[in-house]
Length: 148
Image (cartoon, one colour):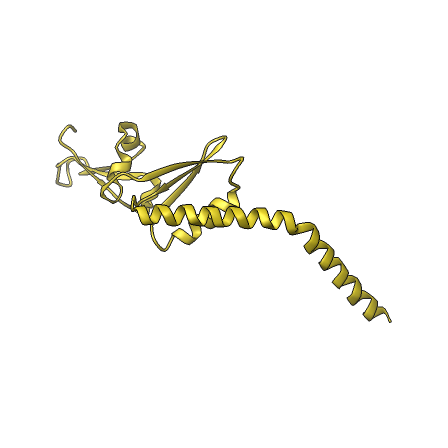
């Protein structure tokens, strides 16, 4: 298999971000073994899986879980979906985000969205007691009006 050609992509419904590859060994004919193998992790073991996606290395970022909640990371990635493909994995202490583009403007957009959702989360936590108090007062007022 030394001269095999490796094609990254989706085969038989496997999504590209799952790491499936087609390995073309050059064999053909129905009597011989198939001309390709579905291999998972083969490419990552060789350390070349990032280079196969979209023609270049993916931008890989580690985000500390104690700083960025899952909601912050997922909201950020949701809004990046229109611009690039991404994957989200996790380690014990980190979120692993891989973007399929190394475009500097996309990196800036990722950072801006991450900052935006982090600030929204902090603001939400700080204002929660006040929002709860307002909600309670409104509900108490409605209850009093209905009971009179």
